[in-house]
Length: 411
Image (cartoon, rainbow, N blue to C red; front, side):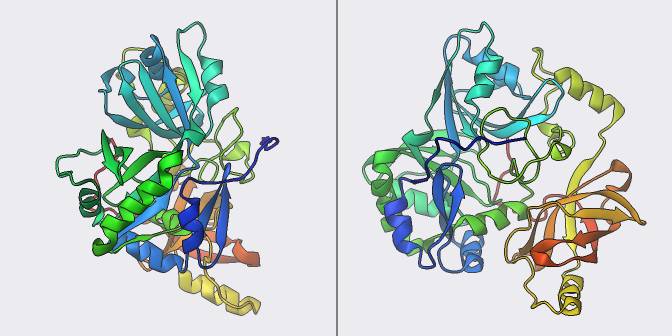
């Protein structure tokens, strides 16, 4: 699959005037059409901030698409695997969407702003929308550059938000929307996050990004509010068992992807294979793209299943020593797939393997055949990261790797 990156420019997000000042290491990632801070000073300290206090993470690069018109609900209900007719105004769905073969095209958040107006937050999908619109009375608008998104995550995030808005947020339910003001500018707050922590996403008009940032940090200083880069967020989401298109599976998308990772049809999956079966509503009355294929898969069983993986990091260390290479275990998230074996036979592959400071383990995701997917199954991994080649032992475990009572499940 070839990704077209022509006619693309890399932008600073609406928060760039502040993030660039704080980025002491000048470590940046190119995420779709934006530069985002990789880590400001030390990713482990930033990860600890997410888990212990409150951190702000720039999530602006997520594509943002409006869907509106008389047939907006009918269209959304047709392309997603969940029942859009049950969505209330002000509610959010996390959902996958598939092609006719049941292969996952992508996943993301769907906001119901009005009865006939929705907002998708995911990878680019304007071509996908138009391909599936048929004769429906529905329109689409790419609003990607209109908003900045700042994720406020951590056990003190509610206190920070209450201080910044002067409002009570104790009854703000998970996967809901609410309008507020921070620093005198309008903000759309979503009770969401991608770290496994209690948290929010704060949507602000691009021109108001710095003003909101300053208002949030002025109010949050006494609660220990700090910043965290993309590396810390990446590790936190793996701990929470949350996947990324292009990294943990190859999306069957027709739009230019949001991630520049090399893609392979071998790594295309269905929601049932990706442990998202709970997000496929086979009881809804209307048809949806890929329904027949997914129903057939449910009857026959999935060819593979995504589960958790814990790798023996001491053996990784030994392999480095044996190879005469200075040890450096997962300085980055290992995104390229590595083969998994059971009883000498290849049974699957890894994705998103990393060191977890929270658990003190090397963890990740394993895509394996159902016959070996039971928790506790012992496997081996061909460790191919950082120029090292060696076989190390690992165990399959349930997902998520780490779950907090203070963080609600995705609805």
